[in-house]
Length: 181
Image 1 (spheres, rainbow, N blue to C red):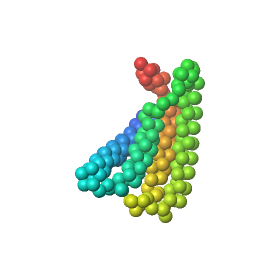
Image 2: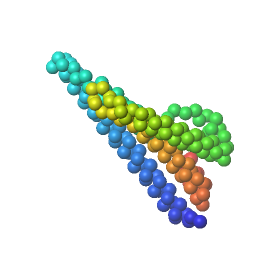
Image 3: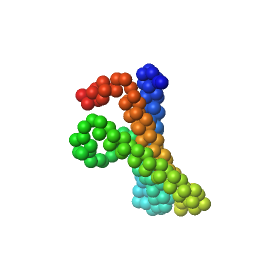
Image 4: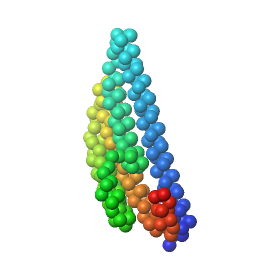
């Protein structure tokens, strides 16, 4: 049997892990966005000043956008910032609301697992094909989808575990009341 102190330590550790992964994703997205802006600046300079368009910029931009979108989507799942219709869920009694949230997290976890596994197949398939102009394997583009699926699965599974830990915590009702205030 886990004590309240152990449950709290596990809760803090899992939250710390999730926060670190989310910050790393946001940092990588930020770097990709800075690189995207800089390369498009180079594209405009090359096209209109040097009169020599760098053709590799478009392929790099597509690659960077994949990472920005997929990693950003995974963080959106972690932060619960995606659009959602919560009218019916919010109208439910607290016990049913918790169950609906749990079911939603389970569905998200399964979606992330399927996305990761399917994208992994695509990753393996595209390893022998090179991206034009960049001469790197096509799999670097699909790696972003693999990472996104894995992170969605991990973030959802951790949220399920944290929800269960909150339910097992002796003062979980006190914490729930504090969150509502």
